[in-house]
Length: 560
Image (cartoon, rainbow, N blue to C red; front, side):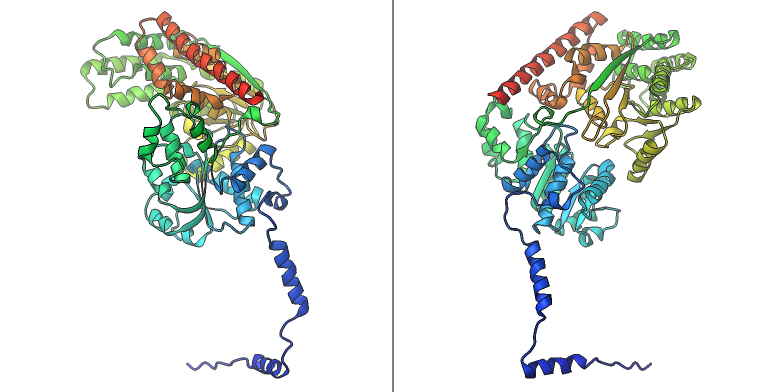
């Protein structure tokens, strides 16, 4: 096959003509146009933010503008954004990223967020900031071919992705939920440490002014050497000074890389939180089942390692289905003795005699009274499935939401809840990070034993953008562990009305960071309800005293 190739020679004649006549070499109109474009693109000075000019539809709050400006002008693009829950850390990060993009200082960006928030980040960056971010879709070519990629750290740290990511030179790395990187012995920490990055933002709602080892690890990701090396650092701070508050010099160093806005420091008018505690009377059959488990506490033939009585008590308070699933799993374990099999089968028979779920009936009553969208939080998947079936029997539409769902399914469930279903039934894992401001009612069907998890739940709806008052309904079954938790911990601390941001600091300072194990210890090692009440009273009094002292300290600091 023969192909004729023809070359266009006209440009040669034009070029030779210009050489002979010495021009004209340029078009004055095109030159003026190019000059005007360059003038428009030039950055006249380093101070102030340019990004808001390019985002006319977005009105950042004063504290968000100030945070972005501080990161840009004083922190050189390396900062920990540690605002309290609901103050808009994503907006701050988006503003900072947009600013660097506008100034031409950043092109290639990696954004690491929890898997459940990948789509949410993608939507916010594209729609609010016009930043062409792409969610990673398991294709390896994305790391090299796309400039701004959002993914979960669990995906990024696995091969073949990890090796490709390590080869990239990132201008900026943004990490959401960065408190999960406090421990420098983890694979996640090692992965982030090995990334090649010019600028870095760490986002966390959990205060990190607690243990100096943890703050050292996080600051070292941003600015290695900012706090010296680890050996010298641990020598300088004695065992008595294991918190940042105790050392003015260390506090000053940390404030050079960290911004923390509290709700009380902003001029935002927050909608009210209306709290209602609802105590539910168990039916006779439910109470008998619960008492049967309590009675096993003094039975020396019970294998306490295999048989978690406290877990079982909590499950019975939630639903007979949750307890049944646990008992069935116990029967299948090899170390189950004949005596244990008898006990388990007896409890399963009692579960079968329970005709109704008193708590579910109360939830139905509350939902019917509200006649609006409601989020129900439960601790157990079996309860979640039961509630969905139960509500359906009474003509109420609901959708489930849990950690095990894939990203696309979570997005689908959220859309169904927003546009069609009345109720979203979520487990704890499902409550992380998602924004649901279109709803203003939460039922805490099962109360968590860690107060910080309550704030994470409420933070899904009580955040920037919520225009209505928020209503929270706390369920507790009468005469059970739930009643102790509700009355002696939450109500005594007056937890729900307080600003929760300080609580994690307090618990760490009192060495109560794992408060669930402390409560479990009280319940397991108390002989009577009276002893439980006294011990829980003491625990709540200590926390309350420290919280009040902290409020006085911050108020004095603010007005002095």
